[in-house]
Image (cartoon, rainbow, N blue to C red; front, side):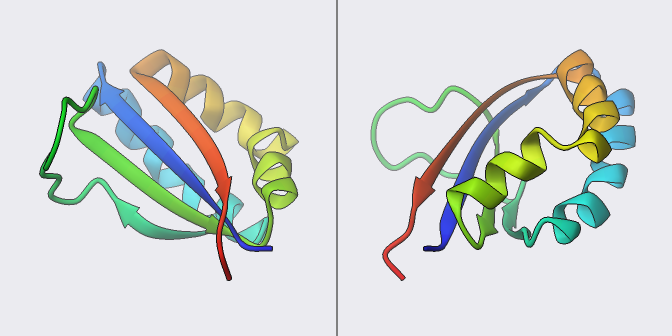
Length: 96
């Protein structure tokens, strides 16, 4: 069943984060992932949102999302991510 990773991002080091962002698309693709939203305009309609950047990823399954996130290919970029931003990630099954 399709799954969506919802990623809240607060960038703390823009230069380092750009290095991270440049490396991710090819790795994401290898694990069947694709961007549905990637840091575009964000408007909060209700409540408070903890970050100004939001990313939505689609994967074939929660397991595929976990394989991507824990993959050896993503280990290096993940270190860059963690050094350049505060990130929350949740994965949820879709209805399709």
